[in-house]
Length: 320
Ligand code: SF4
Image 1: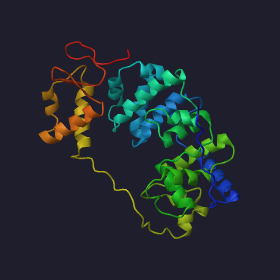
Image 2: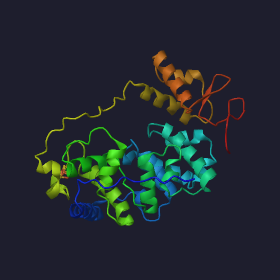
Image 3: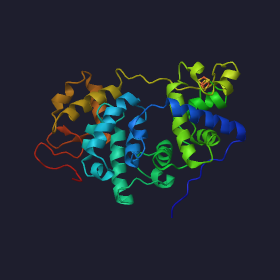
Image 4: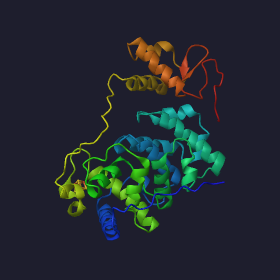
């Protein structure tokens, strides 16, 4: 039985005329200021939208663009991706970071083939059931690929709503239910406009209402912005600390994966040892990659991306 995911009701905070004005203003602005990004073009398949949304989580647009183009050139459909070894997904992920996303996207492609005949589903429950697809990505695909009416809430949208509507300088820690409810209150009734409002408010946060230096003079909702009207009060609540990268296990994991991606086959332990001088940290990072399924340790002591041939020619695991 399919469980129907329900979207939150509108909160009492936003009045209907105010909501309409806010949405109309953001939509008008988007019509003139939107960036031309390939995953937003008319007729882009849902698979391309899903790939872009997974890649854009925690990675800036400029770094995603070449990886997105290369991924879709190689695997234009979920079936193409599902037929490749999972290690090839890790290789194609390149330097996007957080490479477990590559494995989850590959698993999602397999699930789309197995459960949906190779077509990315449009229903929220079916999208949410795909590996690696959470509350944000499921709604983004349903809205942007299929024009469904769902609140789409990313970091940029949370910041715009916190400032323009709630009068807070910072949205504070995320809460899926609260964030969805706040954005649902702003959605136009028409599904197509609601879907466009999702990407428009995201773009407003990315280009104008930026985290550190909002460009209020250029903002289409300046006249009604609650935070500006309140005199830009300093946010006193909890915030997230920016994550350090240099010297962390994340950096070492990235260096180890660089070696494996650059190789056509398995690599020796000595080749991996050369990337980082601290033995304990390097071993911990490699153990983590193995535990996450990003690296296969082979019986002969070499290492490979998952699903590749061992150095003795024995296939490890592959759907090809
Ligand atoms: S007026 Fe400034 S703070 Fe308010 S939404 Fe626009 S950019 Fe953000």
